[in-house]
Image 1 (spheres, rainbow, N blue to C red):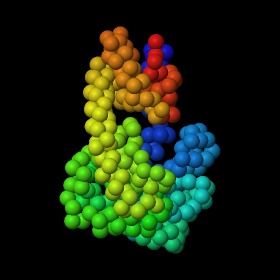
Image 2 (spheres, rainbow, N blue to C red):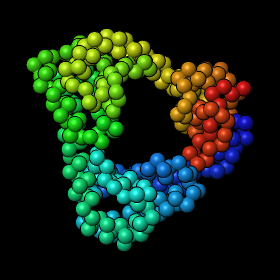
Image 3 (cartoon, rainbow, N blue to C red):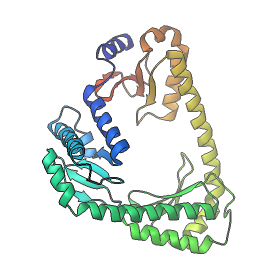
Image 4 (tube, rainbow, N blue to C red):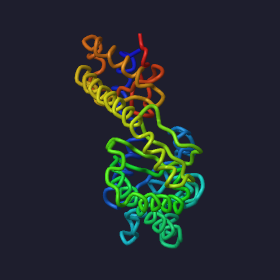
Length: 309
């Protein structure tokens, strides 16, 4: 499989032109106009060749032309999500309908008259205030971080109130647990729990500050131990990734979502052992460990099964 896939990949020029063009536009908008753009999950799941995906591409290109034509339009700090419906999320992200904003003129009219921009800025500023509160809480508790998830931020006022409650109870106490690697995530869950993979402490948004701090005090040691072991594993995977890249001369080496750490480690070890015979085919390749072998030009890579023969 690999010799065939590598030959096809290099013959294609090693990239998917449409994806590369999209990435260039998004990078240009972020660097020179200060606006972050992304595609909603519904658009990403359709694939590059779908009609909806093409409409998304047209929408993005039209935005670029509209901003080039009028430098007085201020979009700095905004987050635009190209979607099938228009709305402003609780965190301040502006979702726009790609079918409606399909020309430079449509974008210019929307950006100059819509109230969405002001709403988005207000909500973004509120969320930034929440992030500052998170930093203060983490400092008071002596931990790595506390973070409100996207689901929890659908209720930003509740997030801010909970963080303020925790601050009021800990502002006079330093290094509450003494476990500096602890991470806390406030989420829309029902019960407190410790993530058994990375040691993150997950707490419900609806729980009181006292109960959260009680659970934190009781669980910090175990969470710290899991976190420490996870960090060791991550460093080992980073070492293996570097080893594969250097031995096989690949340009990019990555892991597909869904491939476990154990599977990734197995694949890396096998690739290193076979590096002498594989290197003539892998040099300059974008290689990704996956669940199956496939030439994936739409994502600019060659997928190799983690248990390849």
